[in-house]
Length: 278
Image 1 (cartoon, rainbow, N blue to C red):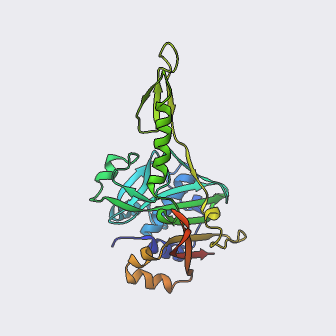
Image 2 (image 1 turned 30 degrees about the horizontal axis):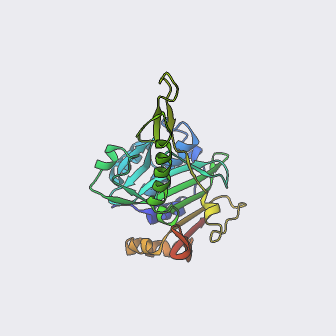
Image 3 (image 1 turned 90 degrees about the vertical axis):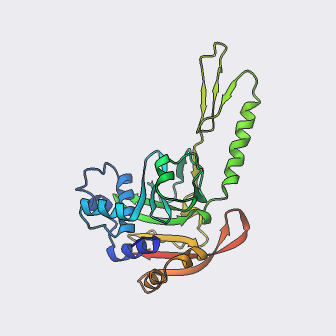
């Protein structure tokens, strides 16, 4: 049975365990808290927090069509479902480093930052994109977010317009040779001998969801653990009725909210806010 974010949240409510380094202490493949957080999120989607390593691996193969790497987004793709990017931060309000990849409203097949394996993992053109952001304090998850990209990031043309302007500006510099790369670009023959080059690389950051959604998310830091999930109401209604009924009858908070349109803050979008606290 294919998984989804509602199943992941149900598994979280049933597990109620945020001590990630304790959970994964026997897994020799996990070298740091960031790795542990990624495994934790994958295990939430598969319901395998307490499972053996071999059972986890089998569940990943059953539920995911793609498992990524540290250099290319996303971290995993649910079979016939969403793409998920996991980000670990150390402070409750720290910005999120996206490195060379600008914020994603959705994942598109033509994205230059994804791998060929990602493009071929299944037949697809675009994927809904989920940012899973975890704040880890003393080896425990203090705050976990699941935010859909179309609630968080603007249309890709917003970011590509900036990149195009930078490239055009560099091209107007006399006496240098500009080359297209997967990054922003490369300038050759910077010096008279023509032996120096300059790489131009984007280092994108985006505000922490706790700041971006401070007008709708009521966070109390004295709690041991808090999870927020934000998605468009239309996305929520696209999930199987069985999963929606189960989550609506679970011991959590689910609210109808209106969020700012990332492409025009004057507009409001009907959305759902799901909150888990323990």
